[in-house]
Image 1 (spheres, rainbow, N blue to C red):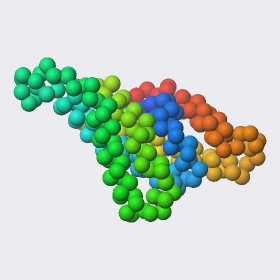
Image 2: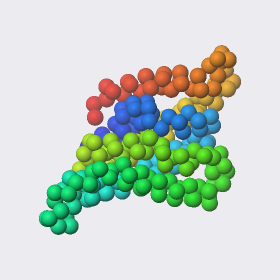
Image 3: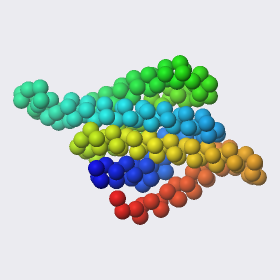
Image 4: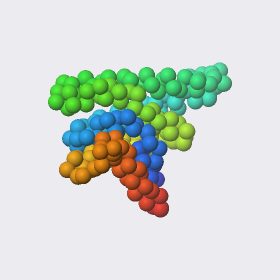
Length: 205
């Protein structure tokens, strides 16, 4: 349990998808003009990660890894389907994003309209794919670790986009030099937030 808690905290603050790896930046910069919309997208990303990463963990463990098919037959222990990793992970992510899009359109038309094209683009959000690939690279051994990492990564991304949205809302009332208005100041603030998150590197987890 202590190991899972450490993994959860680390994936939010230390290995933050935005500030540590700069993944998912297109949606992060484009949507982060309004806190409400940013929070809605953040929750959608958390939901997608919570489903796709555990599913991809099971697919990787029981189908794609070298020798993973030995549970079907000892004769298949030499089969290596790892070359299918990208296409399988992408297929799972696309299917879940389609489900999320239908749910949001059905129950929150205003949020669906605000997110626009960026809701289906969660399917190509590199933070989602990056999470699954990190999970595979780090060789998490249990489904619990995969779920914990998914929750922490999603919450970390949501925290990042809501944080920058809150700052950008305040900046609309500030005097920002004309050349830096819009994405210019957003990049500067993102860099400063990334530096501030580096203080968590000293945490003993």
